Amino acid sequence: MKSSLAFIALAAAGLMVGCASGNATGSNASETAANTENASVSSPKAALEVVKKISAECKSPIVQMVTKQDGSHHYLLDDATLWQTDDNGNVKLVKKLEDATDNYKLIPSDGVIIHYTDNKIMLVHIESNTELFRLAGDPKLKTVLFSPNNHEMATRDSDNVFNVWNVPKRFSGIQISETVQDFINRQSPDNKLRFSVDAYAVSLTNEGRAILAADDPANNKIGLIYFMDDKNAKGTLKAIGRTNSHISHLAIALSGDNIAAVDETGQLFVSSTGEDKGFKIYAKKYNDLINVKFVGEDVLAIAKNKLTRIDIATGAVKWTYDISPKSCYAPNSVKILCSTGNTIEDINGETGTLNRIYFFTSQNYGIIEGGELRGTMPEQCYK
Image: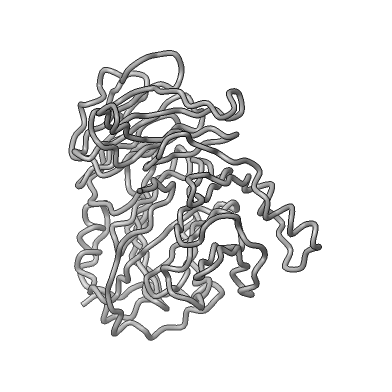
């Protein structure tokens, strides 16, 4: 059984050697301009060429990324170092986490992270590593998903029940020391989504709304898509489409009005959750996709070698951007963050142009922005 996560952890492996020197700490790292020859980055294409020439050991694998409620962005490397950036291009090494990377899940709440052990799912305070409370659910599943605006978070039980918390209400202002009643109130989910089918892909939006993919082998039906509006129709699944092929990824607009799906062949399907039946006319126009997200109310089609922003109403292409992404998401309608595995590309969601590129090691970082290459990477990284 598979789960579609709002934020997808990247499979990555690699050794970091040679770039361990530097003076980055838990506060803002001291930054110097990189001293490189022929490091012209006057255009996005030139910036990408510069990044390609940087030695591999100076670009550590990035396995998770998330936007926090305060607007900063966190990136978890495969060595369990946690980095932070903001929209002004400032960079900070937050911490080296105590456990292996696979035992953590980044979440949008400020100052906290999910930590898995063999027998529990904990919400812990990043700086002090203090357990704040435990989340209801089976820790072995490690299934956590978020709504597009990160206001709703769900974990899945082994019986396919999704426990849902409202992130601003439950996790903002968490105190390291709480009363017993506060602990009990926080541990209890705000909602439970119970699906009557065996869902293998789920996407969540606000107020108990979700879409899910399931098969019906008994009736020889594959790729069924259901919409649940648990606020207005408690526990009711509404069938809104069928792809006739296994669905790999699902996304739902923040409004809950439209959904997008990618099947195992890489084809795109877009549908309304309202009374309109069937898929929109341009549903199969895009092929070779590896995922799909929403940018505002537009569809972001993520292919092996490019991104495409598609107008949901007309099917028209607003822009394309050349990239080979491992993972992308849109914190808002004007920003898209994509990981290529060992770099982060910050893309303008309105125009499809490159804002900046980040890359990290356990102690150092580099940025390409506005024709400038800067950061704390040692000179040997650029040779």
